[in-house]
Length: 384
Image (cartoon, rainbow, N blue to C red; front, side, top):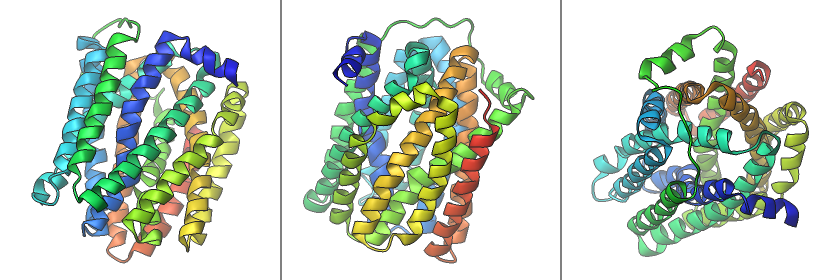
């Protein structure tokens, strides 16, 4: 283990990417594991919350091709800085939710711009700087860092909202972590060369190409799972726990427990990524079924921990294969993936918002079915 860790911290590019992870994952943990519950805590109805995230995913899909345009024109470092500034602005807009609900609910625009620009560039950086034989271990150590920062983010946000009764300190701390992310990429990461300037239409042509069709279906299936992981799970846990303070403790505990079991499967992914992905896909469907038994806070904490571990395996084994393709096919391919993923996640949230008008249980049950189908699509359609 010591040799494994030391090999990563002596590689300057790896260190830069890990420091980038600290800032980004602190912010992501707030969005993935707190914002949905925060909205519901503030009295926003479930259908409106789902529509909020659906609009965010839809706009992100529209923005994603611009990531290639901006990155090949200004470089990845400036693209990350622009995205992080927009993301800091998103948290400031969220902090205005109580006083100015329209501004708070319009914050999805800033989040869409930030993530639409960031994610294709982030995947491209990792695909180019991480060695092929080491992708699984890199991603699992990244998850460990994300778990630590995520636990800190959720605990701090919970305390700020319930004790200080303000989201503004959360926004300020998130901005500080995002500054660390920007500096690490600017000062530590090596150079990347681009063969040509990417145009918006280049990404759309890739999305429509016959050669990309199977992967487009796979990314669509994965996008359904992203909607479930980023939106539905948080709300489901909060509904069972029914207390923002207890919710924060449960989510932080889950982050810590998942971290303790994460490094063990990085080597397994690198050893046989196809087999790992197959096993992870079956486990992922099983983790969805387990949510049917989430009736008490203790049970939901145990189920959420198991779910996080399984999703990390599924996500990592899928992303390893995806990064290998980016390293060969370039930034246009990374942008195209985000377009498909965003459209699928948006469609899922919109569909669940409609179902939620008939009841939250109907929406959650539908989400479990859709996500299981998404796993099958992602596993069967993606080709190495």
